[in-house]
Image (cartoon, rainbow, N blue to C red; front, side):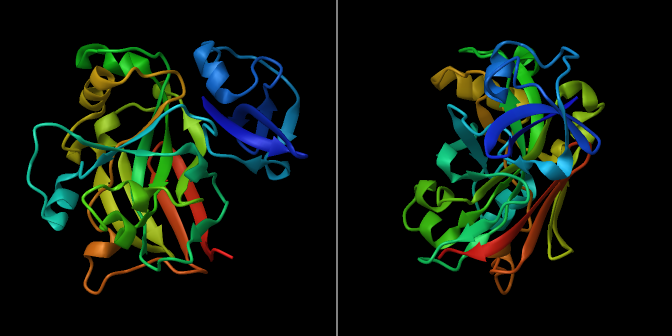
Length: 274
């Protein structure tokens, strides 16, 4: 099943996506994060039917308690950045107010023009916990979504800390829908790609991740408790704009698409910050 967060006539809601319509399930929980916590995603609940074109998509989870991101988690990307191999995943954080939904603009800020794309698979936590074993970690997953960890590289590289370049307003695109794990037959075969103005820039399967999802969940939950609705962005393949010669930066008017097989397509346009 697929679930979305949205606004309709100015009111936020959530529901089940079925083709070109959305079943409004707001009567059962206040938002998608609450529905996940109450274990409501497995039920065939019904509600008012909304047409897809009548709603505005929000980030899949508009209000996550945590957004944890994994750096250099594809071998090709590790090599293009010159990073050494590590025994543990590199973790940084995003703030919830940096998120935007599908079809919403990504903002290039006035203080930088080094805006880069990063196609990623986002994992949304269903069942929370601490010290989650890797052997059972996948049972804690509520679903998956597309994520674009758009980054201001100069701000990312001011120091060794990534956080400034990863948290400008309206740079973390997240959507369009949460896809439950039963929709994915072979997770390793899932293909993560980005397309800038129709040209393919990145492409790799999840099998090429250095640290698989279960290992990431186990590692993260060792130092912080995970809660329903928390988000883990699992890293980006090689081919980022910063490592091309010459570098390729996204500029106002560009269209960037994150395409993940079995999950969906996340499209955003780049606009300049006023």
